[in-house]
Length: 359
Image (cartoon, rainbow, N blue to C red; front, side, top):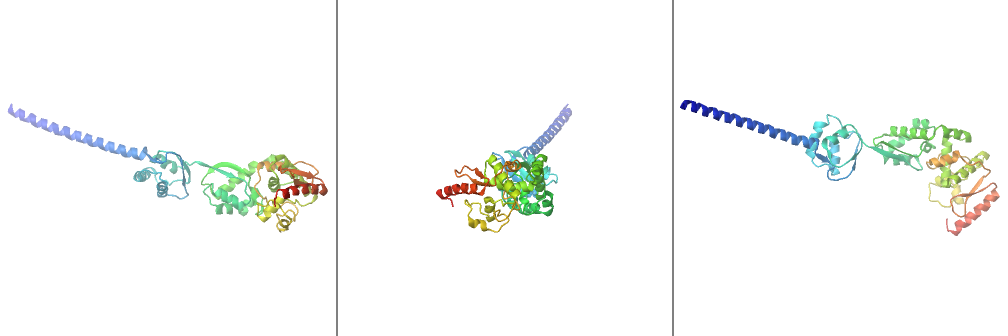
């Protein structure tokens, strides 16, 4: 009986040790799984990007940027909370993929994985790009460079390339006529060649069959209509008056008379602050001086609006050859058939300029 008691005691001790060992193993597994879970949570789901700002932030990735470059930008903008977790997440989730060029609008509380996936797959946001009124092609390039990643030099070279000029049917002097005013969303990483294609697409949308047919009817090309519209738009803001002004210029061109447009003289001088064009201003030797040179100038003096071009295409057919701003400064014009009538209108206007001290 004593022998059996001893054997039972040994078995009991052995079972206790086995249970302890199993418990320790289970505990170790739980701790390990818990640690793995915490690490996984930190890598996968824990907010780590833009956690402090509490608002949407614009983030730009340039062509050729690495994950190190991205991390440096995040740090400099104060958008990353735990650097080491982000670095580890990149090594796990990037799968050798580089961050894609683009503009990314970052909402608050983004996890590492979500951020890395977004940049890896190039899930960027579109950017609104707009071409507004401006006076020179180089200014168009400069303005666009502020809206997309392409720099102004590359944009200007692309616009002035022989292939581009030929594509639009313009010369270097008339290159501004390739642009119509538009606003659309594009990828921020749009390069210079892609921008040329976008401009060409908008050009063809505007110069549809209907507008091209109207050009043919009035005896102008789209380029010539654009040049004339750029002048007409500077003469008045009133649409109906623009149609009248366009009619005057069309009559003068048909008769072989110089346009004698003050806005073209300001353009020739490159001084758009001139309020009163004087005789001295008319002496400048420039193809844009339409007092000295007959016909249309070699290029537009601005990018005209759609309404200005349509005013030219739908100009009023009348018998006026002269116009002068009304002396009431209403922004519209008095019209005349003869130079004598025009001289009377001009004197009234000049008296008001003198009275108001406009020089």
